[in-house]
Length: 234
Image (cartoon, rainbow, N blue to C red; front, top):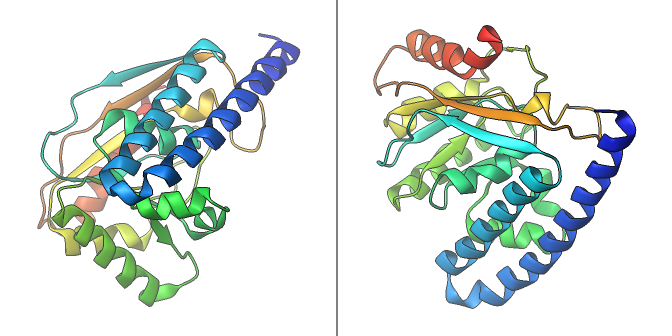
């Protein structure tokens, strides 16, 4: 595909996505008095319209290898693009996601995200911020919601495999539930540092659950290998 065609597709996708995001954000505000489940229902519609637009306009096809466990769990996911932070709501029922604090400062959208249950991450907050993250994640899981964390700390380019941040080990120790590692190669279609989006297949690979209670080094090694599985094999 030529860059000019990719640019047109990206522009059309962006216009539709942000228009629908504005409409659904207003709907979520109207649903606010009805509770978290009502806001979550609107958020799920938002995620599905993102997936449909990605398929129809951008030509991005989604493949899921493996089965996500039905029980409440802690998901450690590879992070290559914004794609998976939105699309997660298509895979799971109202998952709680840890996201950088700055996103919740977006007018209106940030308020809705907070109401939905997005947990802000203060990257410069040190031990205090980490304790708050662990506490809020544990509380969310106590209500039966799956918790998603991106253990590399930020988006990475395809092929990059930085070490896991210390936050993962802290969450693993505190939550004491199985960790489901998830690999994804979304960065090939949605490259970091570029505004263009390209057609192709985005694959999720769901790894074997890592049981709680393992030594830190073993748990980290298992998760590290699993979330980088697509980068290693392609």
